[in-house]
Length: 204
Image (cartoon, rainbow, N blue to C red; front, side, top):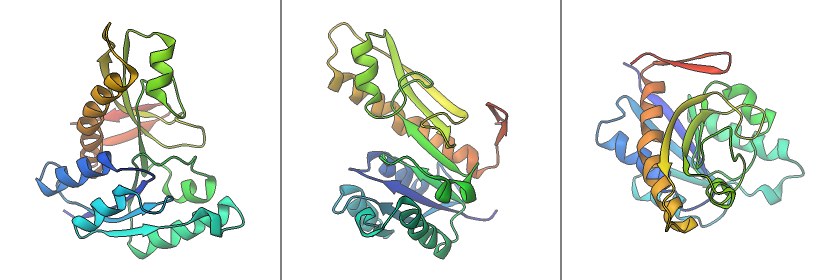
């Protein structure tokens, strides 16, 4: 079986990136390799994580481009240089535009810390907490033009406890992100995901 070349786009500390790397290295995600980690923020710990595992780590400064299209074209060049087949957004804090999305539609996956379609966008845990929900969770989905609107691959529920703070809830959600994100990647790499309209079919 051929190796699936993966790129991970990040903006922060990269704990979900680490979960992907760990699951590839321990064989839970077979036939896959993270070839490059790209950050839009300089000095993120996610880039250091990549370097620790011998993965190319690249900072692309959005401030050096006149527009979003130029920024995303620079990312596309990096992806092409590594023959990337799957792009993962792991705490990437920018809305992906058509320049980057179009070539990778159906091959770009995001992790979101809420049960979509509720609480899309930034700070999903805070939104859910402030709304007073009794159940929150996380969602892995394919990326499309809208913000967190793509077809859902996997979700996991996390109960909101009476004594929770938003940080306590976020920590428990993150634990489940580290479980379902690698699982979604495994299913993709093994060819077990298909998109039918709004639904993702899983054959596992």
